[in-house]
Picture 1 (tube, rainbow, N blue to C red):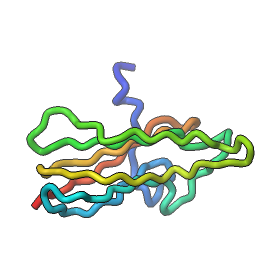
Picture 2: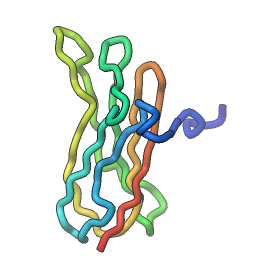
Picture 3: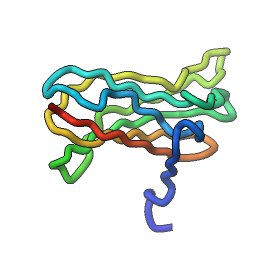
Length: 124
């Protein structure tokens, strides 16, 4: 295997429960604080047990004029049934962007590995 990129899986979140869903408007006004939400299992519920769970999300932004993505956030989910506590894999963050680009989300399932999705964002 020659690189991590070969291990990152993708798909349509409506048919694959591991794909992170990016909830964000398609158009954003420049320099306006905008909420971006990432979730798992919007169409097909993902298990949330000690044996099978989503451990984390990462959110990146690649400006249309940029060469490398900017990491907007890392979100860890630590409670998977210990003491009957469960962390639901869903987060939101607020960002200000000035340039159109692409949002990328990564999720990690302890049984099924890395999954990605993307969403184009237009800045007006």
